[in-house]
Amino acid sequence: MKRRESHSIGNLLRQYLRSEGLETPLNEQRLINAWPEVMGTLVSNYTDQLYIKNTVLFVKVSSAPLRQELSMRRALLVQKLNKQAGAQVITDIIIR
Image (cartoon, rainbow, N blue to C red):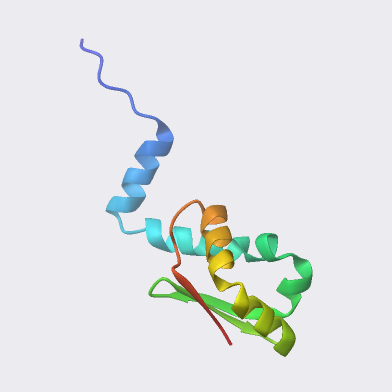
């Protein structure tokens, strides 16, 4: 008997998710779940209706001053959220 090449479980799962088209939705959900951790509970309390469409994160903010502050820091937020999700999931944030 010949011994076959061994692969890690993580790599096999990643390949399976990618082949079944499940990797992107999983990463998107991971990023949305990371929002409270990255932003903190105070900011999270003023935001809702987070969703991703065509690599753009849409966020509804109930406070005008907070909306302005988040708008000015969009590029930094994109970097932090992608880093927390572990993949390049979003390219921009639209804050409403």
